[in-house]
Length: 320
Image (cartoon, rainbow, N blue to C red; front, side, top):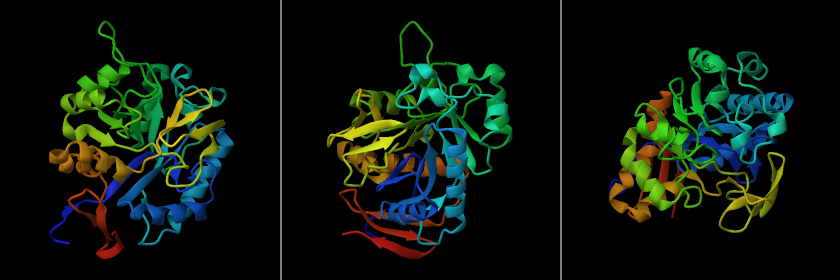
């Protein structure tokens, strides 16, 4: 193993499921099954991400995730918290989210679903009056991320959710979410570098503009990732996978079908000299962002494939 590249375990902070498991509908035993599978991809910790849904359903799924967390064993990827992506976003940038279920981003509405396990909230800052909810979340130690939005004032945000996707892009005469995210060094930026969500030139722009330590690789993967599913119901829409991308019936991109280590490998194959940088964007940068402490590592071969995964001193997975 000493001849392979060694890194920290990867951290996934934005994904809706994979291996057929949907965090918005699944039971705790399915989450435990998934958390074992994730370690084979080098993902040592994760934030189950909940899409827009009714308050009752969100609360139900939070409880299922909490049950799963209480039953986790050492050979599983660790549940680090919940990423609440939906309900507080802008209808003008809704993506596939169901706008009928959106709530105004207020402290009172957040308290309808509030739980100590929620660690990241995506919201539209332009709808957060006087930034009251953002301030409240910050006091609670919750990361505030601008997403599905048009607002350019990110002063009360820690980061942005899937940069350029479902947000106001760059216009040379206007302020925008994407522009503020690029020029404000303190802002962490999620990017989905799966070859579908962002063009290669936009990726180059992000890598040239943002400090390396402020870029976070995420998959935004759908439950159909790493499964045999070609279509599924998700967020109130029928989603179709054509072998390249997953979209709604209307053609809106729904999410990724890649897993995080596959995204790291894709970037490295196109730019081998910066492999270490890309690994850190999926690991070290998240450890710093969330103050994560995990005991484990990944061994990679020269083709950027994972050959072994260690957690708590035990080799839990060996690749080919």
